[in-house]
Image 1: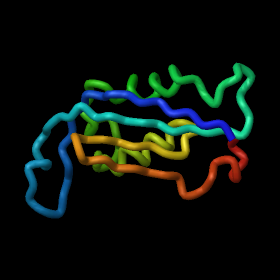
Image 2: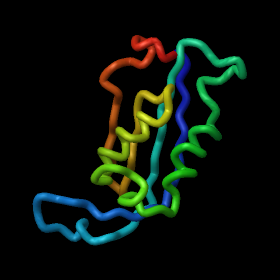
Image 3: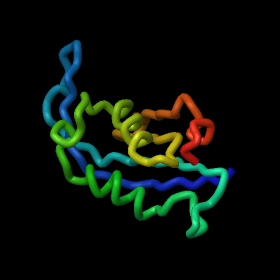
Image 4: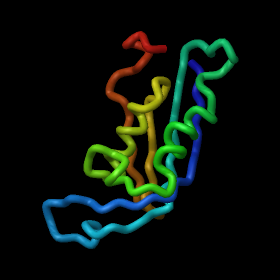
Length: 119
C-alpha cells in the first residue's frame, strides 16, 4: 500500500449554527491547517497515488479566502469539513482539520475505498 499526505493552510471564515449560545455563531475567521491523507494499492500511470497539485486545487483552490457558509452545503464545523474533504478526493481516506491551535477534527472513512473497488 502506498500512502501520501498533503498539508495546506487555508484562510477562511464561517459562522456556526449551534443549539446553544456561542460567539462562534458570529462570522469569524481562522487560518485552518488541513492535512489530506491518500492511499492506493497501485500507483497511477504517472507513478503517483494522486497528484499533490490536484489535491491543492480541489481543496485549497476552492476554500481559500472564502466564506465556508456560502461554499459548503452544511454547518461548517471542523468535523463536517474534514468529512467533506475525504469525499472530494477518491484516494483520500482521512483528513485532519485544525481550526486553531489545539483544536483539531479528524475524519476517517468507515470503509476502505480499496474494498469498494475505487482504487
